[in-house]
Image (cartoon, rainbow, N blue to C red; front, side, top):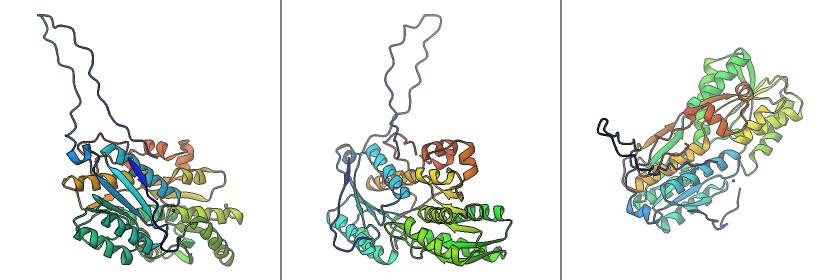
Length: 369
């Protein structure tokens, strides 16, 4: 059961997955065995562990407290979380701060007041969300934090390997440019995954002096791609020597791609991004697209992992308190050659993007992710 809960607009507002439930039906009775050859029992799938009582009764409520919900990445992340909630037998109550950090903290406080069985905190600024996370921990409510520093070792953290994401994208940039490039960098400080990717970019510039940052732009709001497109056009016009863009968030990359196309610079400038969605694949594979590579995990898979981890905590099961989801480099060339048009096909072509054994729930059938 999924509940999409609208939260009060106390403060000013700043935004796929199919779960396969394996079933096993009893076959027809075997014919009687002859005296010459004893019958061999039919193989049966191992039985799942018993479903904990609270889950069987539908009493488990997990509150998903999001900072952002707009954008393809976040929509697919939510779809995965919703699908996994059905698979493990929990009610998922969803709220979004829509980019307003104080509102996200209030949403978490509301989940605590309503005595949620567990909470998942999806992104957020440490300064505003950590006090509320501490209140949840003090109230003995299990906490799972994705791409945000919870400020406590009591919470389970789930992170994409953001340093590796940046390394993969920048390695492609270095290879394609021959280690010489003027780069437009898109970045906004304060978001944990972007800060980690920025650490890699900072070191990369030191290690590769032929690749320099010509300008920096960046904004995160309810229309990030459009805002970045406007900034990118101005930066590219002011810096005609730019030959590459490092945009380590898919909404950044989409905005940058729009700017490059509007200025007619596709033959000169290439974009190296992060994250992936079906819409992103469409942008990367369209004719003349400057977005040539992205490093990513499957967002719906990460959403599934978050729900599984929260369910395990509620059930009193052991969970690794520092879960990392490894990324893969996705290139425009490979997408086109493979005829890949959506994330489902991408995961089929890259099985490592699916991690069903990470925080596996013993009483539920393995999901598609």
